[in-house]
Image (tube, rainbow, N blue to C red; front, side):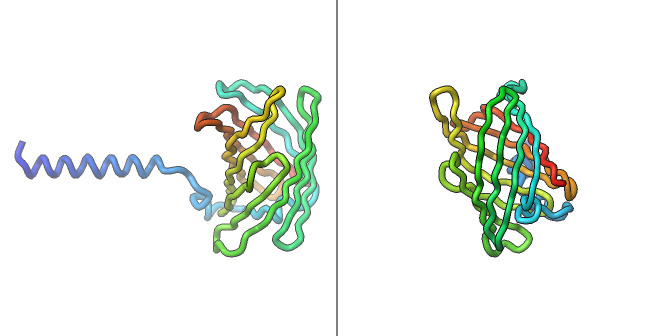
Length: 185
């Protein structure tokens, strides 16, 4: 093969590989910036809400179902979301999120939050109808507690329904996933 053809073929392969790698780049909320309705946590998570969800193990089997009654309240950029969970096994838990909308961001709305069972601070942002944030959850299992990395995605479908999908990871491996449907009256 002549040197010019080899160089052209090599350049084409590199360009194709770069294109494939770019296609593998993670999805961000900015990919949804033009989708409506716009998800602003301070609007959707304000007042009473309910949610129903399921926890799936790593093989995809439903291992737990739950219902959540919650109330959110916001004062300016600071919000509180109190969640009361009832699980299919009869157990109960509560989580109180302290949320803050951060300044700036333009089309992106940045937030951070803390809760009693969250290690450190949750951070994420919304654009269009999508919100993604990451945090570490101290998850009690049996007599032990495991720090699980949470990759939490929310999508506002309309003024009343928000869908949530979360991957729970430890050591980079997905251990479980959660699907939740939020309902706002």
